[in-house]
Length: 470
Image (cartoon, rainbow, N blue to C red; front, top):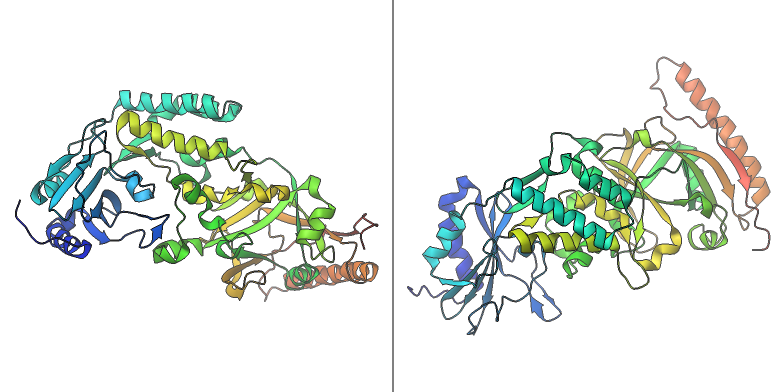
């Protein structure tokens, strides 16, 4: 092999960049340190990623002083990041000018030593992947067998897998993944229905939210419902909680691509809880300003949910930190890869992953409303704030309170046992509601003004029945 002096990641990257520029119209590109540029537990992840149409097809580790030839007995170093899992080729380049290439599609085969030109040819002209009825049936079998092993009590998931439409909605996607894909859109899309089956369909008619007295004052005063950006939530680790769980590597926010940051900042969260937590002392203490705040009860209208407006009970890990649902997803990817060579990709996981949390938060019994701002629900405004808990600069979004297109409708305000001037504030809230109703009525009767879509006529005000906590 000709010696080009490729002793550093930068030199190899520059050469690949020049070579792949000839294939840019076919979607090929290359990035240096495309995911991680830091050390994690003394293991550095791959240095270079080659893409086809923004999908990873090859990852390259540059190993200095590498003298061991990879084989079944001396395998490639384990890497859990998403690009490595989705790539067809794993490559090691050592400073003795040797490339060792592993083709995931050729299962149980030793990596082969190739020169630079052979490496480039393998990546640009890969051997075609066979994907037909036999492969679809194998994937279905793996889904069902794994469900019976890990989630045997999830009857809805079993029904979903055994549905005759399952195989027809399996599609192979270039360059090297399989996924669910159908002609439907929105919440009816096949993969969305898979996650609903996995997590359980939300069917509760009412939920509660604990918050401060100032929050409910602002809600009524401006007839608005405010939601906070995901990044500023009280559990700072939850943005990448599922990625960390599945891949074994925590990805700091600072190392994310800016497009990923933009997407996260369009996701807004409101944390509620189940109705059985209404007027619960622990919840008052934790989430309502030590019982100085309020407990709000909402009616739920699931007809106003879609793939950008989701309401779902959060799934928590058990006391040992295990999530059966996430173990299921991880097992599927490993088993499909081992059986067929290519990876199964859950393309909607980036949305549904926000309904999983650590065991430490299980006392909340959280019901999470998530809105991905795409204009589905008309908004009053968006803005930025500094979060009180962690001083994080975070986006907020305001919707019309009790709009007929919003998924939850405020029905009751309960004042906590330590609420300042509890009885007086109850009287004043009732009067405030009366005046706000009249304001809306007068506004909507004026043909020159924009109608206010905010039905607050059914809101009641109550006092907590807890008397012993002062």
